[in-house]
Image (cartoon, rainbow, N blue to C red; front, side, top):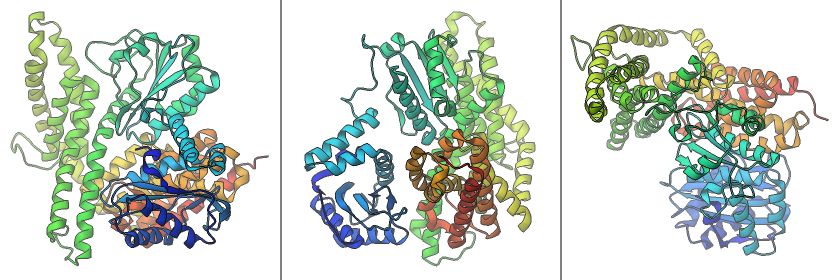
Length: 639
């Protein structure tokens, strides 16, 4: 949803002069009412004030973005106000605020307010853009300035906008595809870095993003045919068959963020291998440049990225069920989360989503390896792992869980590749029945035998790990919390981070909620520590780093660790250890205080389902301050 679509002329006030923060809020609320999207002014204003009580929404640089999501709102909307003289809005940098945007979001409207908030923060970091807004002569000019900025920053959301700078003959020279396991931060950060590098080098580039909401800015057949080469910066499976015969560089998504100019120069200099697509397989076809370990990681991340929506949505539904029973004063017995009818509904729906996690993990790992023939094998193998099926007890036993799904995905995928090669010797007349009969039948038989044979052993390992976690004493759990917190920070979205996160979500499924609390707090610390450092130790950072540091408050509180990546990439030897130690401190304290978390995502926005929430926030604050102080100690002052 575009910002310009939410902002109406009647909701804009230019050159206003409120005398105080409370007066500014009153004026913005009135502007929201003028826009016609507020059904209950008093209720909406209560939400705005309640949010301000948690901390001022003025983030510095003259920007304030108050926001509320409640039942007093009919539809998403924005109000805007310029205050040339500034108003004291209790900003983080103690400077007056002169650009104020107020967001209104309906109670059942998903996370539209977070999306709008992130976009506003991104475009408002441009100083020239802020100057233009403050100088706008009328509301039409104000709206046009925002429209032009959005068109430039988010061309994929503007159908009539040009998608990339073109050469004199109209052809785009370099194409790129970016994708990360979660499809949230890395994907778009790599795309933006590549676009900026292309503009700097004077080379036209178009980037397709394979994000959580699907592929955007999709590369056309004509563009692929006419381009000089393609950069695929991805940590999960993307469609590769369309690039057959073109020069392709396949690399990590983090390289798209760290070395975009180098990647573009390699394409332009011809230093890229020609990609040859084999048969019907997807990205598992190799050009020989990737190590076997790298391929295994990408197959694993394909499974994890497709599993995450089930994990997050299911986990939050279960957390809501527990919250409802808690508010109702239901006994915390074996039926906790199902006593109240509404709680039972959310619990059941969350359980249903959780039941898909293990089969989806196995299915998409196998599909990444062997394409569609592997999907059935991995799905059924994952389901057999979740039921603990054996030859003696089909459909029941000790579940082998995530470990069993990993085995089913990798073993099933590679076995299907072998089966496909064997079937290549069959008469061509049988090609039509291979995908609909031979592969499914043979694959189902193979994976059934494998999983029924290994499930007893995998189940014992799985239950042994669960018993080990349950039997851990206080000191052991603190050490575990430190390790998990550090893992979330070491590579900020990479293999260590994802391994810790999957471990945390698996622990939720088995009822160990303290582990997920340590995992999430470890992921929140790095961006917050960097944001604090750019606020209180400005002389350690460049001007651009200081401006972008404010966004990290939002990213950290939203549990988006990837906001720290640009800072880590520019100075890894100082930034990564500082953040990792801060995250380990927070993770250990969370365990020591007995904090629990029933939701696998959400950051500060799921604080209602955090056990010992006050101590959890204290742990987050201490860990972030430790990280900030270490950054101040290790980083050199900028001249």
